[in-house]
Length: 485
Image 1: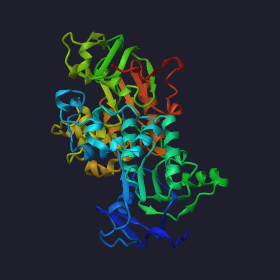
Image 2 (image 1 turned 120 degrees about the vertical axis):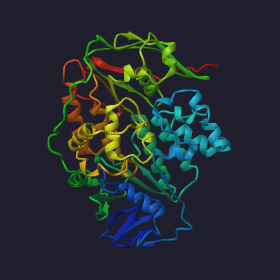
Image 3 (image 1 turned 180 degrees about the vertical axis):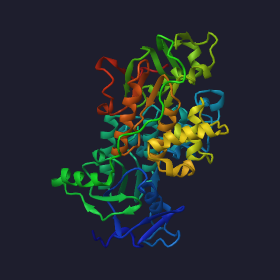
Image 4 (image 1 turned 180 degrees about the horizontal axis):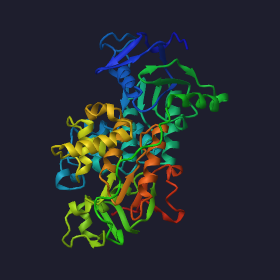
């Protein structure tokens, strides 16, 4: 690729950022109005490359040509929610407590007058989030949050927009809306960089592909739309297929001595004038496997917070968990002890200098963001789970220095280490590359095959629903309307 009108050109044979070095044997250029897919496995260096292009021009021996002062380069990551709010909560169990969230702003309070601008209104309508104005930021679903961050960045009209894992957390309709919006933005002259870890996500409007493997940047590929299948097949070589997973002990630590894993009867949840759940009933028996589906903002995460005993509004509702009615004397820790849970936002609560080993070992307890000293036995168990997912060489790395995919894999290992009788997996494959998705899917199938283990599996990709879930066990949640007057 050669373009004299490039926005920037990465010249040096190595590029580095915060101690991570990328090999760059083929200098590459980024031009206005073009869409670039940066693709590779988890840990290949995609996020690092994005940060180098955004703000690493003058670090070490990096040689990047272009007028940095004149360029408006913006990057979107899921963790940007903390930078937007100025908050950095560490106690996961408090995220639905009203008193703990009094200082969290609503979307309107955070954005202010920008929300009345025509461009903001158009973008909100394009991505179908016209109704989030009065929601507190931490009450947005992961999909709503992703859309909100995208809109906030697009109103700044950048010359180059870098989006890390853009499709995670978006339902099918929202993915189509996002693609239309980004394709239009490129036509207006903005350069787009999408950091992806699955070939299936490469959009049709792609112009160039930059492959990464083991911290080495490959040669730029011109995306030939007449040979899309051939290019995708070529890119599959970037993803190593792991051997069959060797799981540690997975038998639940607590006996399965109940008939009902959970039952919700005519449940309602609202915050101020916003109705999140309306008249929801659902029952899961011990040993049953279910999928939970629903569009962005339909209330899936809120529903699960009732089951996981995080939401104080659980006491207002008719909820039975492990044969016991909520509010009849059981503690939240009695409940959490039997549940293995992962959610899309959980990684935000491991941001205080914990090692990967400490994060996985914390799964042997019942909370998130509150760490205890690890004894030798717990460390040995955590190492077994790290080895199962090929993370053992990263055991001493700080969790917040890992790629988003590596973080996600570690949190899955943490969830399984809990050895629970009820697994609640909220978008468990969120951010994983194609090879590691297969690895985790294999682990889920083996763990949940045991008698009595119940499963709730949440996804926006119906093809990812495990075969162990029967067709009649798909619970679809709809967004309640209308809201309170």
